[in-house]
Image (cartoon, rainbow, N blue to C red; front, side):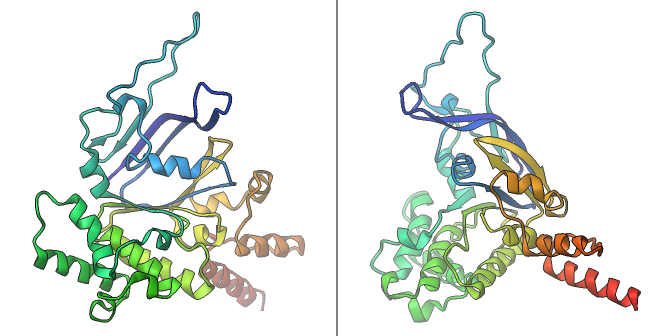
Length: 306
């Protein structure tokens, strides 16, 4: 599903003294098949942006009671926002947002805090039941839950009847993700999917997402403050600052301009820091900032030098 965004703006508590403009005329396209990153400092608008993608935050034109705001005298009206995810037009009042949310799964930061059911299988099945037309078949539901737990690396027979609150932190996160992917969304949006995990846990979560992406989930969008995560996994990344879209670039181009990112209050990957350190010593390394490519470039240079 291709995601097309044009002139997207959003203000929290509009027309009040507490108004905060979270998004300001954002235009970008996320192609089907991408593993897309969204980065920016705290308050940059990145989380507000992704919450639009499955209609958690609605465009004004999709709200039945929304009235058009007339522009000030002598001023041209702003261009209308456009937000399309595949065949879903999120600006249309007739859009089936229930069907949209089945196709666009959303995993929030620390999703394990959203577990609520008495058993793991009930928690994972909730989303499936919520999106089913009529009463779901118990056997099909069990099969879907079993498969979702298997995809995230958990044994159904071992944990299905356990309380999710008795699991380890890593297991809870996997159960929460299983509760979203059980509907087999075509787009999966995750806000800081590896936040709070140790290095091994982070690696396992990213490997999980790549397995999902390589099988049936066509597009994955991750919000992350971890630049190594972006460099190692994403096809492209969008940089947000003060509600504006600064740029959309592949990591191989994005992290070449370290000064631009640091000026925005962002870090750079370890590989980019090493490239800069080597450059200061007169050694030029050309790589795409993935660890494997960086090591290969260093070894190739060393072999050539000898």
